[in-house]
Length: 235
Image (cartoon, rainbow, N blue to C red; front, side):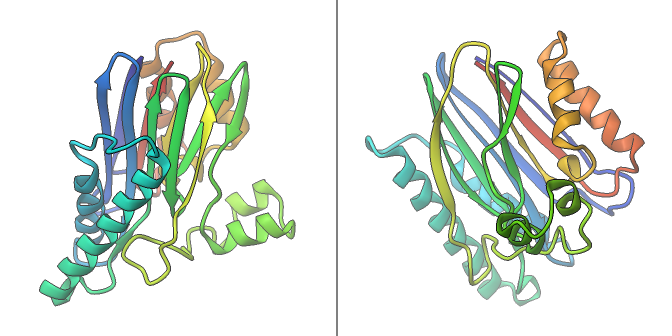
């Protein structure tokens, strides 16, 4: 298993509020996570850091990995709310949090917000997660297309986040086969690249690190208006 990661502040943000985790546990298992913080006065990066800290050193505590990931997200929720209580200026901060645990041929995931998991399998790109945004709700109802959702003025308005009152995670699992890629990206990447453009880069016969570099370059060429973070694993 090969894991690569990349993060960039972008051109229009004063700081990078994205945080990520890429932890190889052994030859066939790994934990990947991306958090994209929100909130003023550096609170967003604090929320994202607290969420990622919750998963550092994580190991499954039992056979139900899916339930275990959900418990960890609840722990992240408690950690962020406790920090808000102890530091009033951080009140209202929150973060997206998308976590992927790879174990052999299985991928277990949990997700809150608009960070995404993609599964690249036999030349096809499969979007695993749904965006917890106003645009994501309209897309799910069939009122707008994926391209309209990507360009929607409320595309980044979260309806759920870790640290928010509504923070219920989605979760699930999917199967992996040799040659697959999995990608977690913050919205700074997938808001500036269509799924089709991401698929073209992932299908290129180049090293994994170069795939991420190429996606980052495309996002920066498109304006780099947000923090850009991606973590990718090749099976």
